[in-house]
Length: 113
Length: 110
Image (cartoon, rainbow over all chains, first blue to last red):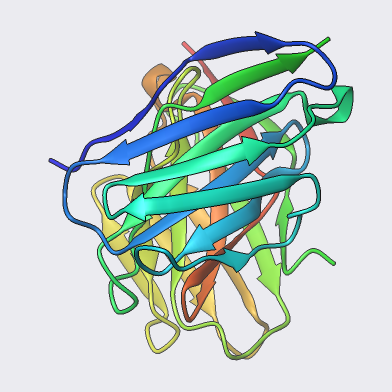
């Protein structure tokens, strides 16, 4: 079974802090994704990565950056957290560009106060 | 703009009922249409998916109906059970990306 793990289930940070959200997958998947989930808005793509050291902006990249130094790990960085970044963050991975199914982690609920 | 439009936002049915969730899209380049199911505290998981050259797909109690000319697709859950209570997302794929609908929160009363 594919396993996607996220470093924290719940996180509380203060406005202005730098925040790191970590995601690890154990199935040698090439593609990895970060989504944000808000009630009534569905899942919105923040960034994705085709492969190591490669990244592409999604629909809402402002205020976020990412890092993928190793194939199994994809980090989402909030350079200076703001209250409007309070949300559920979901990481997903996919085998490659040909395979369609994405596997999701359990999510990190981030609260910025 | 929203690439995939989903309705209704919430749905309540009795056990044994047949909830139907509808989605519509505009981009004819989409080539794969999955449905994801999400339980509270969990990430979404693939439930069932269809390609645009097929009009219907069944897996157990779950059926996707696909109307290519109308650019619409829907999820039907036969003989719904309380354990089906979850949030359902339709989606469409273009190259690498998945575009999600906004979700439908389904409640099945016993």
